Image (cartoon, rainbow, N blue to C red; front, side, top):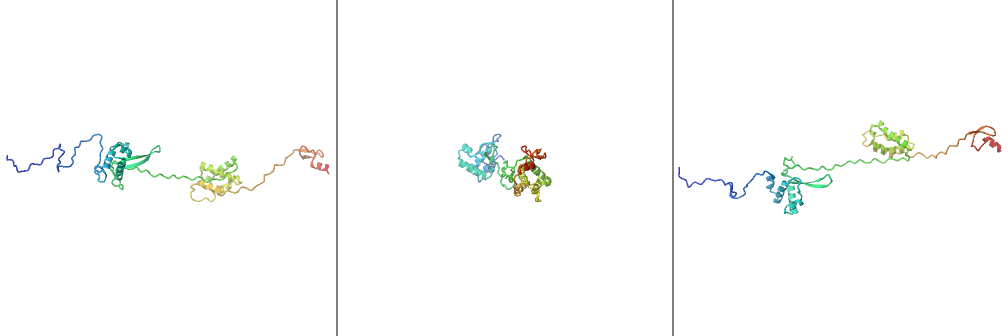
Amino acid sequence: MGTENTSAPPPAQSAPADNPTRTRRHGGGIIHENTRHTTRFVVIGNHLVQHKELSLLAIGLSCHLQSLPTGAGADIKSLAARFPEGPTRIAAALRELEAHGYLRRERHRTETGRIVTRTVSCNQPHADRRREPADTGCPPAKRTPPPQRRTVQKALPAVPQPSSTAPALFQTALDLLADLRRRDARLLLSATDTAHLVPGVAAWLERDVTPGAVRHALTAGLPDEPLHRPAALLAHRLVAQLPPPPPFRAPAGPPPPRYEVRNCDGCDRGFRAPETEDRCRDCRAASHP
């Protein structure tokens, strides 16, 4: 029992914890002396640091970007000033990270109208963008919606203009347009549209067209479907159906003067004549046979 068996192999001993030159499986390779970080550290995934397609420069650059605080400079110029690699190599590394989803560069317009570029560093890229992305810690890309085309409403067609500016003429035209909605609810006009159409109606009235005839020309034969722009339809009719000017009439002469009645000095008969005449027409004829 007390005899030592010198032919038996010695028991296996584990490598001491303080000896970094040995491992359990072989004598070479890397072992780690890890100390738990409590401040100023960043978590880097093995999918990045052991990536088989990224260059070492791209991996290191991504680690550096993930360690930066929000708002720190991450453009090529800032990175080239920080590291010995030149702008060409840094730009190539950034493109590698973009291609594998570790980086996005987005352009945004500030409140002052200036265009700035934001660099978004993702600590875990989306493996398959066709599927719903998992919670990877990297916010999804903010897609700027395409600018919406603003529908610009065409201006109303021009309407005839009257030669007269009489207030009564324009008031009659205004009352006529305001009354159209009572005949057809689709002809409810805004104040702006009414102001545009008033001169056209006044031009009709100025051509000896009665208000009833103007109203009939504007409302007769309207289509049955809804009117999207009733003011445009009325403006078109005011132009297309404008009647010709009234026939020319020579202006009437002034009315003959009306003299006061006086008594004839020859026959004492009353007659009308200027003050220079003291006899009636008959007496004047008798005195000049």
